[in-house]
Length: 86
Image 1 (cartoon, rainbow, N blue to C red):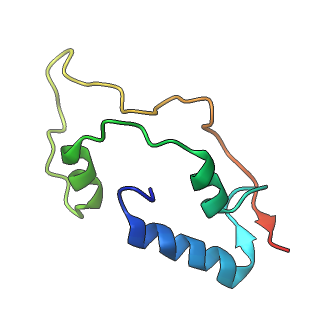
Image 2 (spheres, rainbow, N blue to C red):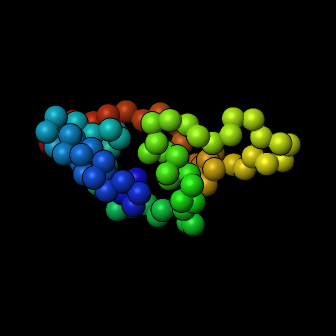
Image 3 (cartoon, helix red, strand yellow):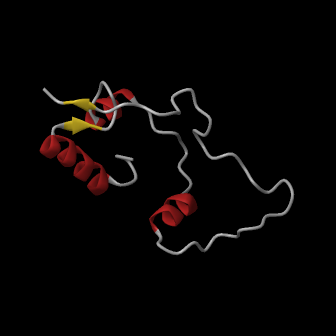
């Protein structure tokens, strides 16, 4: 997220500091970002679609046209618990 939306990322960092809670149970968003590696190459059409308030991509695709998004079904998916900042 820091790579595609640095302003939104900084806002989340500020919220964690302001409220004294992290989204993740053991690390802040900033700490987790430092540990991660962005999936590459990022597809510009997917980034543009993510920021658009109106979906303009096709809803129905021909058989075989759909592809699994980068990072989908990774080993880090699933729920986490928030933690209180010290």
